[in-house]
Image (cartoon, rainbow, N blue to C red):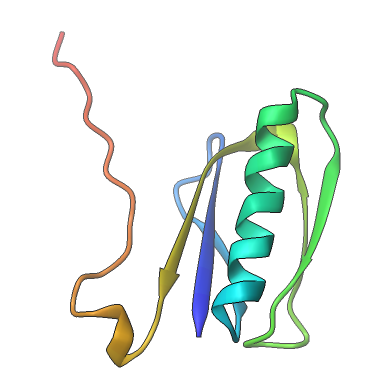
Length: 89
């Protein structure tokens, strides 16, 4: 199972959707990155293959980051996540 985490502006917790295969996860990840890079705000409607009842609609103008990771034995022992370094003033 592959998880795609999305970080939104001013939101401390990531939103996530899952894909069963790597090809589907890569395709969705590329779609999200292209939407972020386009500069044209639009709404992405996402579904989750892990929880079929889960649906998300996200304004691309609010996306800050996306991350794809694999769950299960092939994913390794490292927890996926984001790290933010800030400069001390």
